[in-house]
Amino acid sequence: MMAPWETDWHIARAALEWQLDMGVDEAICDAPVSRYDLPDKRETAQAPAKAAVAVPAGTGVAPAADPVALARHAAESAGDLAALQAALAAYDHCELKLGARNLVFADGQPNARVMIVGEAPGREEDRQGKPFVGEAGQLLDRMFAAISMGRDNPDPSKALYITNILPWRPPQNRDPSSDERAMMRPFVQRHIELIDPDILILMGRVSAGTLLETSEGITRLRGQWCDVMGRLCLPMLHPAYLLRNPPMKRHAWADLLSLQARLRDTT
Ligand code: URA
Image (cartoon, rainbow, N blue to C red; front, side, top):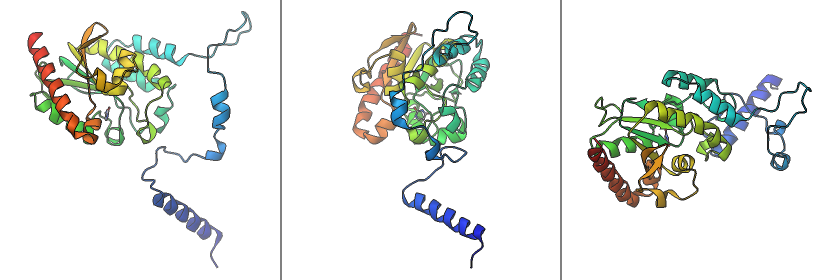
């Protein structure tokens, strides 16, 4: 007869094997989540949106904090890149932080003329703490190498500086919610101010949607020069999308040539 702890061990192992059979291939959080303890989604969906509640004067109760206002205050107080990274690390209002291994801040040359803003870290970026280092990132490096640009190039007109709208990996690479994007927007805007690039590349739908505040699709926006915070800006197709749709690479090539011409014209 098996000892009780042996039975528990076999039950736990069988449960894990069952999850593997179901296709689970990684743990998103460090600690297990009991689905029975989570609030009922239907109740949460119907609950009124969190808002700063008006409090009668003199009651001494603080109104609920507005996470976007807190983000704006934290971001605007950051005087340099190190302070901005520290402000992001200290920001506790975005739940994505709980499931991420690392804060993915940026990579490349801070004096680059071109700054790329992507969407969010994926699995490899979360592991390494650097943006665009997975399969899509390798394609991004090859795309820019084709016009002699790269994140390691010390020459500012050939260099790249790379960041994302979100510094934490969303579980299972799901789309970031509008609340998450709204919270991170002030940090990205401050990041852009501090780098002060000549040209911004909005890499993909989430980046273009968040910084241009539009729901227009990226296949319409790509290749159209526009303005973000008073600087030239080019929305492009995301390399992950190009990996899934190789025929669209010709549009990416047209956009890279357009970027090259613009950099030449604005020296
Ligand atoms: N996709 C992005 O948008 N950013 C990354 O850092 C990686 C993949």
